[in-house]
Length: 127
Image (cartoon, rainbow, N blue to C red; front, side, top):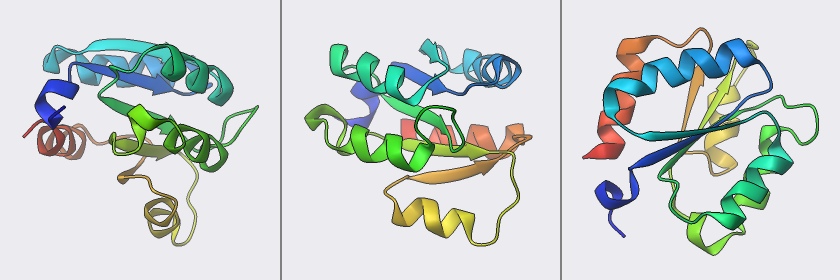
């Protein structure tokens, strides 16, 4: 599948409901089907059952499996080896973007998410 065919749906993985609502609102103008979960393990289960998610927004600090553990499990799924996965976090850490890219995330966004940066990033995956 090409990026454009694949990018009809998004999965938001964040244990903070306010953050999921914000991301959901930011995604609405892009007319994507949006799924939300609050757990890394639940995200993996959703992805195992559904191979059509086109982009994943994954919080780095989840209660059950952190984002680094979760992306390792996701990348083992054949359907999601190259799917865009964007790390999101509100914590300020040195070299966090580099750590994320090394861990096979496609990009990193810090919270609060700047809409202009977000929309440009999403457009880059759509095109």
